Image 1 (tube, one colour):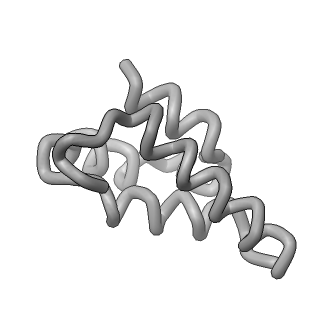
Image 2 (image 1 turned 60 degrees about the horizontal axis):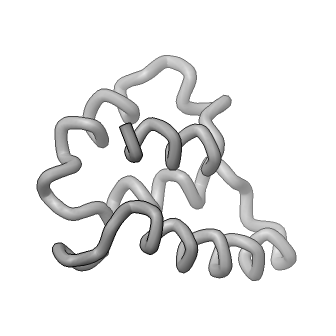
Amino acid sequence: MLESESISDYFVKVLAIYNHMKRNGEKETRVVEKILCSLEKKFHYVMVVIKESPNMDFFNIQGLMEKLQV
């Protein structure tokens, strides 16, 4: 993610890539983990909270996008 990029713009690109990955059998939770690792430093606190959440297995891309936009 670029510093000048908004979350909405970033997720447009991520969702396009995710759709290709999904067709190749990639699991959504794995994509969520990759997204979290690619966020810029200002989202570090959100990343830590989400990664420590016991419900990470149930977390989806739509839920992650909603949390980051808040």
